Image (cartoon, rainbow, N blue to C red; front, side, top):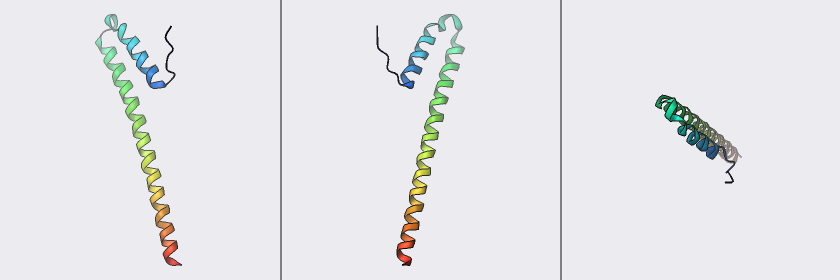
Length: 74
């Protein structure tokens, strides 16, 4: 018995692969719809991560600006 990786990406990939095996009787439309939804979820999560990163960078730049303005005002 194979030990599975508990990461959600490998679980999703295994689920997609398993679903594709039954795709012969379900038709190509279901497989393409599943792929499309899977990739939309992945890209949505990446977009959220990128947005959080830029937000952190903006806060960092703002804090640097405030620190430098305070430093030069003294």
